[in-house]
Image 1 (cartoon, one colour):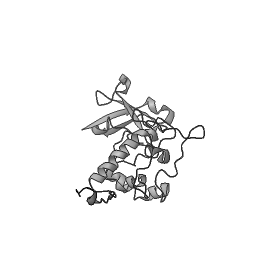
Image 2 (cartoon, helix red, strand yellow):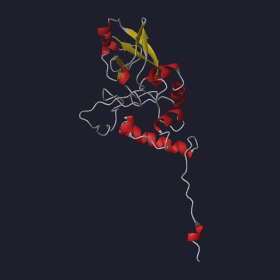
Image 3 (cartoon, helix red, strand yellow):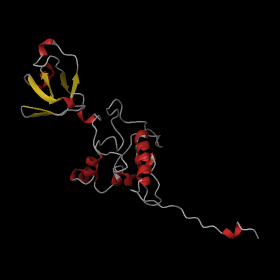
Length: 210
């Protein structure tokens, strides 16, 4: 089943003529959508239910799509599979962006004063980046915090004592920090991340009656 969309006045600033796109119905409410027309690629489209009568196509209930290329990279409403994130960590694009360093090493926070305050509660509001300097995880939508994504979780674990790095060092927002804690603890429960158990030696002679 497909849905037909009529694009006319919303392309006035792009100097495109009226075009009709056939889009699968599962993408009607799934944003962002990728549109292509006359060799020009439009990265983002937001759908609206209300349309005028002059935009009626073969479908009796068409929907208008408004293109917003400026805010396309800020949308965070796509569900990226964990498998895709794991492949991304091994890709050439990831190595070019981050090199051999963890994802938080090159991140710098913006704050006033000498001492860094507590990180923000969240970087994403209403499925959109609400800040110009999001945390290392929120800024890259292909970095998924999941217990199966071990290579990413290990970047936030201290190699010296096995402790989870604090937000003062990594710059993660409070929401992603909580997700990180849950993912690491779950990975340890499943045996995907090894950790040392403290060893205590007791002198049992102190517990025996003389």
